[in-house]
Length: 339
Ligand code: 5MM
Image (cartoon, rainbow, N blue to C red; front, side, top):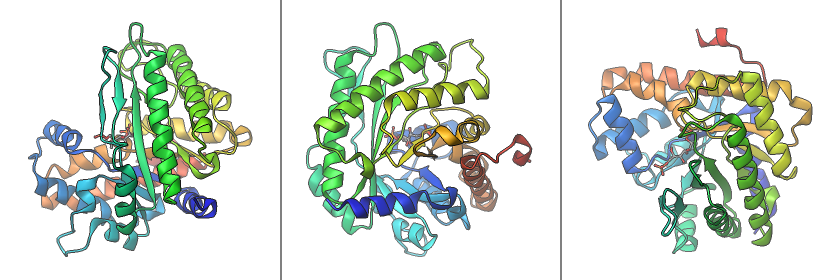
Protein backbone atom coordinates (compact mmCIF):
# COMPACT_ATOMS: atom_id res chain seq x y z
CA UNK A 1 0.00 0.00 0.00
CA UNK A 2 1.22 3.46 -0.90
CA UNK A 3 -0.52 5.83 1.50
CA UNK A 4 0.53 8.87 -0.53
CA UNK A 5 -1.28 7.60 -3.64
CA UNK A 6 -4.45 7.05 -1.60
CA UNK A 7 -4.24 10.51 -0.03
CA UNK A 8 -3.59 12.18 -3.39
CA UNK A 9 -6.61 10.49 -4.95
CA UNK A 10 -8.84 11.61 -2.08
CA UNK A 11 -7.54 15.18 -2.27
CA UNK A 12 -8.25 15.28 -6.02
CA UNK A 13 -11.74 13.82 -5.64
CA UNK A 14 -12.80 16.55 -3.23
CA UNK A 15 -10.81 19.53 -4.51
CA UNK A 16 -12.61 22.84 -5.15
CA UNK A 17 -15.64 21.84 -3.09
CA UNK A 18 -16.43 18.92 -5.36
CA UNK A 19 -18.21 15.71 -4.45
CA UNK A 20 -18.97 12.32 -5.95
CA UNK A 21 -21.69 11.13 -8.27
CA UNK A 22 -22.93 7.60 -7.56
CA UNK A 23 -24.00 6.29 -10.97
CA UNK A 24 -23.37 2.68 -10.00
CA UNK A 25 -26.92 1.36 -10.01
CA UNK A 26 -26.78 -2.36 -10.68
CA UNK A 27 -28.88 -3.65 -13.58
CA UNK A 28 -31.85 -4.42 -11.32
CA UNK A 29 -31.78 -1.04 -9.55
CA UNK A 30 -31.33 0.88 -12.79
CA UNK A 31 -34.20 -1.06 -14.36
CA UNK A 32 -36.37 -0.27 -11.35
CA UNK A 33 -35.71 3.46 -11.81
CA UNK A 34 -36.33 3.18 -15.56
CA UNK A 35 -39.59 1.26 -15.00
CA UNK A 36 -40.85 3.97 -12.62
CA UNK A 37 -40.15 6.61 -15.30
CA UNK A 38 -41.61 4.51 -18.14
CA UNK A 39 -38.20 4.04 -19.82
CA UNK A 40 -37.52 0.68 -21.59
CA UNK A 41 -35.33 -1.54 -19.41
CA UNK A 42 -32.69 -2.50 -21.98
CA UNK A 43 -28.89 -2.61 -22.19
CA UNK A 44 -28.96 0.09 -24.87
CA UNK A 45 -31.10 2.46 -22.81
CA UNK A 46 -28.76 2.01 -19.84
CA UNK A 47 -25.83 2.77 -22.17
CA UNK A 48 -27.52 5.89 -23.54
CA UNK A 49 -28.37 7.09 -20.05
CA UNK A 50 -24.82 6.63 -18.82
CA UNK A 51 -23.50 8.39 -21.94
CA UNK A 52 -25.80 11.32 -21.18
CA UNK A 53 -24.22 11.59 -17.72
CA UNK A 54 -20.53 11.18 -18.59
CA UNK A 55 -20.71 13.66 -21.47
CA UNK A 56 -22.45 16.44 -19.53
CA UNK A 57 -20.37 19.55 -20.13
CA UNK A 58 -19.02 21.22 -17.01
CA UNK A 59 -20.07 18.35 -14.75
CA UNK A 60 -16.58 18.45 -13.27
CA UNK A 61 -17.36 21.86 -11.76
CA UNK A 62 -19.29 19.97 -9.07
CA UNK A 63 -18.17 16.36 -9.45
CA UNK A 64 -14.65 15.11 -8.78
CA UNK A 65 -15.33 11.40 -9.15
CA UNK A 66 -18.08 9.13 -10.47
CA UNK A 67 -18.79 5.60 -9.27
CA UNK A 68 -19.53 3.23 -12.13
CA UNK A 69 -21.14 -0.21 -12.35
CA UNK A 70 -19.27 -3.06 -14.06
CA UNK A 71 -21.61 -3.03 -17.08
CA UNK A 72 -20.92 0.68 -17.67
CA UNK A 73 -17.13 0.25 -17.50
CA UNK A 74 -17.41 -2.13 -20.45
CA UNK A 75 -19.63 0.18 -22.52
CA UNK A 76 -18.70 2.93 -24.96
CA UNK A 77 -20.24 6.23 -25.97
CA UNK A 78 -21.75 6.31 -29.46
CA UNK A 79 -18.40 7.73 -30.65
CA UNK A 80 -16.64 4.58 -29.43
CA UNK A 81 -15.04 6.08 -26.32
CA UNK A 82 -15.02 3.96 -23.19
CA UNK A 83 -17.25 5.47 -20.52
CA UNK A 84 -14.38 5.73 -18.02
CA UNK A 85 -12.24 7.49 -20.63
CA UNK A 86 -15.11 9.88 -21.41
CA UNK A 87 -15.31 10.72 -17.71
CA UNK A 88 -11.57 11.38 -17.57
CA UNK A 89 -11.76 13.65 -20.61
CA UNK A 90 -14.52 15.49 -18.75
CA UNK A 91 -12.16 16.01 -15.78
CA UNK A 92 -13.77 13.37 -13.54
CA UNK A 93 -12.01 10.43 -11.86
CA UNK A 94 -13.68 7.06 -12.50
CA UNK A 95 -14.37 4.64 -9.66
CA UNK A 96 -16.13 1.30 -9.43
CA UNK A 97 -18.72 -0.44 -7.27
CA UNK A 98 -17.22 -3.83 -6.38
CA UNK A 99 -19.75 -5.38 -4.02
CA UNK A 100 -22.04 -8.04 -5.37
CA UNK A 101 -25.13 -6.75 -3.65
CA UNK A 102 -26.80 -7.18 -0.28
CA UNK A 103 -28.37 -10.64 0.07
CA UNK A 104 -30.73 -12.00 2.76
CA UNK A 105 -28.62 -12.99 5.78
CA UNK A 106 -29.28 -16.66 6.60
CA UNK A 107 -30.83 -17.07 10.04
CA UNK A 108 -31.55 -13.34 10.41
CA UNK A 109 -34.98 -12.55 9.03
CA UNK A 110 -35.29 -9.08 7.51
CA UNK A 111 -31.53 -8.43 7.54
CA UNK A 112 -28.97 -8.40 4.76
CA UNK A 113 -25.28 -9.14 4.30
CA UNK A 114 -23.33 -7.74 1.37
CA UNK A 115 -21.40 -10.30 -0.70
CA UNK A 116 -18.51 -9.98 -3.15
CA UNK A 117 -15.21 -10.77 -1.42
CA UNK A 118 -14.39 -13.90 -3.44
CA UNK A 119 -11.99 -13.03 -6.26
CA UNK A 120 -11.98 -9.36 -5.26
CA UNK A 121 -8.16 -9.06 -5.33
CA UNK A 122 -8.13 -10.16 -9.00
CA UNK A 123 -11.11 -7.97 -9.91
CA UNK A 124 -9.40 -4.94 -8.38
CA UNK A 125 -6.29 -5.61 -10.45
CA UNK A 126 -8.41 -5.64 -13.61
CA UNK A 127 -10.30 -2.48 -12.63
CA UNK A 128 -6.99 -0.77 -12.01
CA UNK A 129 -5.90 -1.51 -15.57
CA UNK A 130 -9.23 -0.03 -16.69
CA UNK A 131 -8.35 3.24 -14.93
CA UNK A 132 -10.37 2.96 -11.71
CA UNK A 133 -8.72 4.80 -8.81
CA UNK A 134 -11.35 4.29 -6.14
CA UNK A 135 -14.01 1.71 -5.27
CA UNK A 136 -17.22 1.38 -3.33
CA UNK A 137 -18.86 -1.31 -1.19
CA UNK A 138 -22.30 -0.77 0.34
CA UNK A 139 -23.70 -2.54 3.38
CA UNK A 140 -27.37 -2.01 4.24
CA UNK A 141 -28.72 -1.99 7.77
CA UNK A 142 -32.49 -1.93 8.32
CA UNK A 143 -34.28 -0.54 11.35
CA UNK A 144 -37.34 -2.54 12.41
CA UNK A 145 -38.77 -4.67 15.19
CA UNK A 146 -35.79 -6.18 17.00
CA UNK A 147 -33.42 -5.26 14.18
CA UNK A 148 -30.67 -4.56 13.44
CA UNK A 149 -28.97 -7.39 15.30
CA UNK A 150 -25.39 -6.95 16.49
CA UNK A 151 -24.49 -10.02 14.40
CA UNK A 152 -25.72 -8.36 11.19
CA UNK A 153 -23.85 -5.14 11.96
CA UNK A 154 -20.65 -7.05 12.79
CA UNK A 155 -20.78 -9.35 9.76
CA UNK A 156 -21.24 -6.35 7.45
CA UNK A 157 -18.49 -4.39 9.22
CA UNK A 158 -16.03 -7.29 8.81
CA UNK A 159 -16.88 -7.56 5.10
CA UNK A 160 -16.39 -3.79 4.68
CA UNK A 161 -13.04 -4.04 6.46
CA UNK A 162 -11.81 -6.94 4.33
CA UNK A 163 -12.92 -5.13 1.16
CA UNK A 164 -11.14 -1.96 2.29
CA UNK A 165 -7.94 -3.90 3.03
CA UNK A 166 -7.88 -5.37 -0.49
CA UNK A 167 -8.50 -1.95 -2.04
CA UNK A 168 -5.70 -0.32 -0.07
CA UNK A 169 -3.35 -3.16 -0.98
CA UNK A 170 -4.01 -2.24 -4.64
CA UNK A 171 -3.65 1.54 -4.02
CA UNK A 172 -7.36 1.97 -4.77
CA UNK A 173 -9.22 4.25 -2.34
CA UNK A 174 -12.06 2.38 -0.63
CA UNK A 175 -15.36 4.14 -0.09
CA UNK A 176 -16.83 2.43 2.95
CA UNK A 177 -20.63 2.70 2.89
CA UNK A 178 -22.60 1.44 5.89
CA UNK A 179 -26.10 2.65 4.96
CA UNK A 180 -28.74 2.72 7.69
CA UNK A 181 -31.86 2.74 5.55
CA UNK A 182 -34.56 5.40 5.83
CA UNK A 183 -37.27 2.76 5.26
CA UNK A 184 -39.76 2.61 8.15
CA UNK A 185 -41.49 4.76 10.73
CA UNK A 186 -38.61 5.10 13.19
CA UNK A 187 -37.73 8.39 14.88
CA UNK A 188 -34.67 10.56 14.30
CA UNK A 189 -33.43 9.44 17.75
CA UNK A 190 -33.59 5.80 16.68
CA UNK A 191 -31.68 6.61 13.49
CA UNK A 192 -29.03 8.33 15.61
CA UNK A 193 -28.77 5.39 18.03
CA UNK A 194 -28.43 2.77 15.28
CA UNK A 195 -26.05 4.81 13.12
CA UNK A 196 -23.77 5.51 16.08
CA UNK A 197 -23.70 1.80 16.94
CA UNK A 198 -23.03 0.82 13.30
CA UNK A 199 -20.19 3.31 12.90
CA UNK A 200 -18.56 2.43 16.21
CA UNK A 201 -18.60 -1.28 15.35
CA UNK A 202 -17.42 -0.48 11.82
CA UNK A 203 -14.40 1.55 12.94
CA UNK A 204 -13.46 -1.10 15.50
CA UNK A 205 -13.40 -3.70 12.72
CA UNK A 206 -11.50 -1.36 10.39
CA UNK A 207 -8.94 -1.00 13.17
CA UNK A 208 -8.77 -4.77 13.75
CA UNK A 209 -8.32 -5.48 10.03
CA UNK A 210 -5.53 -2.86 9.81
CA UNK A 211 -7.22 -0.33 7.58
CA UNK A 212 -5.40 2.94 7.11
CA UNK A 213 -8.19 5.36 8.04
CA UNK A 214 -6.25 8.22 6.41
CA UNK A 215 -6.65 6.40 3.09
CA UNK A 216 -10.41 5.84 2.98
CA UNK A 217 -13.67 7.70 2.45
CA UNK A 218 -16.71 7.13 4.69
CA UNK A 219 -20.10 7.22 2.96
CA UNK A 220 -22.73 7.39 5.70
CA UNK A 221 -26.42 8.22 5.88
CA UNK A 222 -27.55 11.47 7.43
CA UNK A 223 -29.44 11.25 10.73
CA UNK A 224 -33.06 11.56 9.79
CA UNK A 225 -36.46 10.09 10.70
CA UNK A 226 -37.83 7.10 8.75
CA UNK A 227 -39.67 7.83 5.53
CA UNK A 228 -42.97 6.60 7.03
CA UNK A 229 -42.60 8.57 10.25
CA UNK A 230 -44.92 11.50 11.07
CA UNK A 231 -42.06 13.34 12.72
CA UNK A 232 -41.07 16.68 11.21
CA UNK A 233 -37.48 17.70 11.82
CA UNK A 234 -35.98 20.98 10.71
CA UNK A 235 -32.96 21.16 8.43
CA UNK A 236 -30.91 22.50 11.33
CA UNK A 237 -31.93 19.63 13.60
CA UNK A 238 -30.93 17.02 11.02
CA UNK A 239 -27.61 18.81 10.62
CA UNK A 240 -27.07 18.93 14.40
CA UNK A 241 -27.88 15.24 14.93
CA UNK A 242 -25.78 14.19 11.96
CA UNK A 243 -22.72 16.14 13.06
CA UNK A 244 -23.01 14.93 16.67
CA UNK A 245 -23.35 11.32 15.56
CA UNK A 246 -20.30 11.57 13.29
CA UNK A 247 -18.24 13.32 15.97
CA UNK A 248 -19.09 10.51 18.38
CA UNK A 249 -18.09 7.70 16.08
CA UNK A 250 -15.74 8.69 13.23
CA UNK A 251 -11.97 9.12 13.79
CA UNK A 252 -10.73 12.63 13.05
CA UNK A 253 -8.04 11.36 10.67
CA UNK A 254 -10.57 10.04 8.12
CA UNK A 255 -10.01 12.62 5.35
CA UNK A 256 -13.49 12.74 3.88
CA UNK A 257 -17.09 11.95 4.69
CA UNK A 258 -19.36 11.85 1.62
CA UNK A 259 -23.04 11.38 2.38
CA UNK A 260 -25.51 9.21 0.49
CA UNK A 261 -28.93 10.80 -0.05
CA UNK A 262 -31.00 7.74 0.86
CA UNK A 263 -34.20 8.77 -0.94
CA UNK A 264 -34.42 12.34 0.39
CA UNK A 265 -35.83 14.84 -2.12
CA UNK A 266 -32.88 16.45 -3.98
CA UNK A 267 -33.39 19.97 -2.59
CA UNK A 268 -33.62 18.68 0.98
CA UNK A 269 -30.45 16.59 0.70
CA UNK A 270 -28.66 19.70 -0.58
CA UNK A 271 -30.10 21.86 2.23
CA UNK A 272 -28.95 19.32 4.85
CA UNK A 273 -25.43 19.19 3.41
CA UNK A 274 -25.35 22.97 3.37
CA UNK A 275 -26.49 23.30 7.01
CA UNK A 276 -23.88 20.78 8.15
CA UNK A 277 -21.09 22.75 6.49
CA UNK A 278 -22.47 26.17 7.37
CA UNK A 279 -23.40 25.61 11.02
CA UNK A 280 -20.48 23.41 12.05
CA UNK A 281 -17.61 24.63 9.89
CA UNK A 282 -15.21 24.95 12.82
CA UNK A 283 -16.10 21.63 14.47
CA UNK A 284 -15.67 19.30 11.47
CA UNK A 285 -12.30 17.52 11.33
CA UNK A 286 -13.12 15.95 7.96
CA UNK A 287 -14.04 17.28 4.53
CA UNK A 288 -17.82 16.86 4.47
CA UNK A 289 -19.14 16.27 0.98
CA UNK A 290 -21.65 14.20 -1.00
CA UNK A 291 -21.79 10.95 -2.94
CA UNK A 292 -25.41 11.16 -4.05
CA UNK A 293 -27.16 8.99 -6.60
CA UNK A 294 -30.88 9.82 -6.61
CA UNK A 295 -30.48 13.35 -5.22
CA UNK A 296 -28.35 14.27 -8.25
CA UNK A 297 -29.76 12.06 -10.97
CA UNK A 298 -33.51 11.87 -10.37
CA UNK A 299 -34.60 15.18 -11.97
CA UNK A 300 -32.36 14.48 -14.99
CA UNK A 301 -33.64 10.93 -15.39
CA UNK A 302 -37.24 12.12 -15.36
CA UNK A 303 -36.53 14.94 -17.84
CA UNK A 304 -34.69 12.58 -20.20
CA UNK A 305 -37.47 9.98 -20.15
CA UNK A 306 -35.52 7.83 -22.59
CA UNK A 307 -35.79 10.33 -25.47
CA UNK A 308 -32.85 11.70 -27.47
CA UNK A 309 -34.50 15.09 -27.86
CA UNK A 310 -34.47 15.53 -24.05
CA UNK A 311 -30.74 14.91 -23.55
CA UNK A 312 -29.79 18.58 -23.37
CA UNK A 313 -32.51 19.43 -20.86
CA UNK A 314 -31.53 16.43 -18.72
CA UNK A 315 -27.85 17.38 -18.81
CA UNK A 316 -28.70 20.92 -17.70
CA UNK A 317 -30.55 19.53 -14.67
CA UNK A 318 -27.70 17.16 -13.84
CA UNK A 319 -25.20 20.01 -14.07
CA UNK A 320 -27.36 22.17 -11.83
CA UNK A 321 -27.74 19.58 -9.04
CA UNK A 322 -24.02 18.81 -9.09
CA UNK A 323 -23.18 22.49 -8.90
CA UNK A 324 -25.68 23.24 -6.10
CA UNK A 325 -24.29 20.41 -4.00
CA UNK A 326 -20.78 21.74 -4.50
CA UNK A 327 -22.03 25.14 -3.33
CA UNK A 328 -23.62 23.41 -0.30
CA UNK A 329 -20.20 22.01 0.55
CA UNK A 330 -19.09 25.54 1.30
CA UNK A 331 -22.30 26.40 3.16
CA UNK A 332 -23.28 29.06 0.61
CA UNK A 333 -26.42 27.38 -0.78
CA UNK A 334 -29.91 28.81 -0.40
CA UNK A 335 -33.28 27.78 -1.77
CA UNK A 336 -33.51 30.73 -4.16
CA UNK A 337 -30.68 29.15 -6.18
CA UNK A 338 -33.08 26.39 -7.20
CA UNK A 339 -34.69 28.85 -9.64
C1 5MM B 1 -26.55 4.04 -7.13
O1 5MM B 1 -27.16 3.30 -6.14
C2 5MM B 1 -26.32 2.43 -5.38
C3 5MM B 1 -27.10 1.17 -5.16
O2 5MM B 1 -26.66 0.26 -5.99
P1 5MM B 1 -27.36 -1.18 -6.02
O3 5MM B 1 -28.01 -1.25 -7.33
O4 5MM B 1 -26.22 -2.12 -5.86
O5 5MM B 1 -28.35 -1.28 -4.90
C4 5MM B 1 -26.08 2.94 -3.97
O6 5MM B 1 -25.04 2.27 -3.34
C5 5MM B 1 -25.81 4.39 -3.93
O7 5MM B 1 -24.50 4.63 -4.36
C6 5MM B 1 -25.96 4.92 -2.53
O8 5MM B 1 -27.00 4.32 -1.82
C7 5MM B 1 -26.25 6.38 -2.61
O9 5MM B 1 -27.40 6.54 -3.38
P2 5MM B 1 -28.51 7.54 -2.90
O10 5MM B 1 -29.59 7.45 -3.93
O11 5MM B 1 -28.92 7.04 -1.55
O12 5MM B 1 -27.84 8.88 -2.84
